[in-house]
Length: 89
Image (cartoon, rainbow, N blue to C red):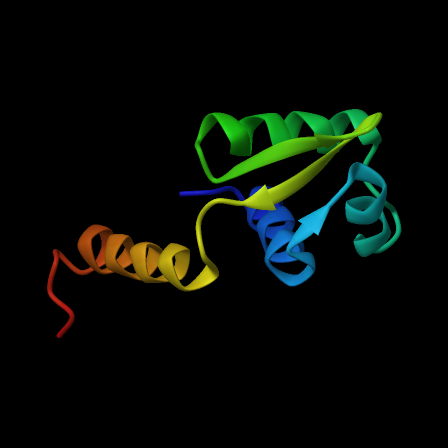
């Protein structure tokens, strides 16, 4: 499961397909997170294998490795399992 902040970044990446740090920061409402905060969250998402990046000249472009549908399907299954004793009824 992802934190709310990580989910927000994933939603931006699903929307944009590929995005640099600068492009991701543009998506946030004020007050925008610090660049270092965003980099930390991106590092966590990469460690969890939800995203990856490729280098374009001097900067990185991030992209999702997990589809939005796949993520929310798994999240729903986990919620049913955790909160409803694995019974959708």
